[in-house]
Length: 211
Image 1: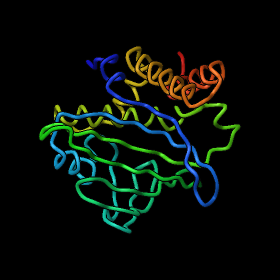
Image 2: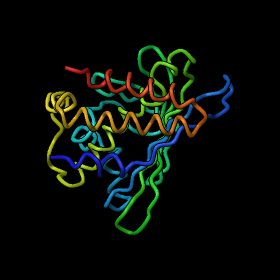
Image 3: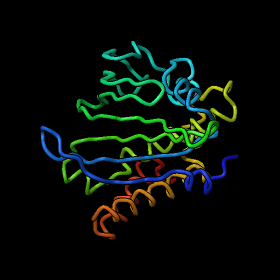
């Protein structure tokens, strides 16, 4: 069993913007502290065998300028690498390119903050439909998986079990609460409350369709 409320509240969620050469981009930031030293968190997030145990199988060249491919999901290029502090990469999915920046910050010798920024040019229509939860909920599921990995490092993720859990009452509650919190982050960034709430509901229904 997963403590849904504790898992949701463990993550900080923030929405912002950044000016890039191609114009203004939206930034979705998720951050969580893990009870693990920075070297272990770095290893869990950069070693293919460990990534597959909490996220998705990955293949490619996981080093600076190398290409990677997550099974059934995104691919991209590693654009910066500073072990064990963090890395940057392109995130190529559905014919679109966005960017991720991942940072690891020690909060004590045995605790590390994981921070991920997902930077994307998102058109206003799609943002109005789903808001930050479109990518935020997916990253929340990943951060949850990483937390479970540190408690049971030899247990591999079963994609079929994850899919079944996401539509269970517990899974739908998790996705609902996470979507709502991304909605609150969107309001804090200037989105009208009713628009953010509508986007959060649509995001929940996308990730966990009602029965």
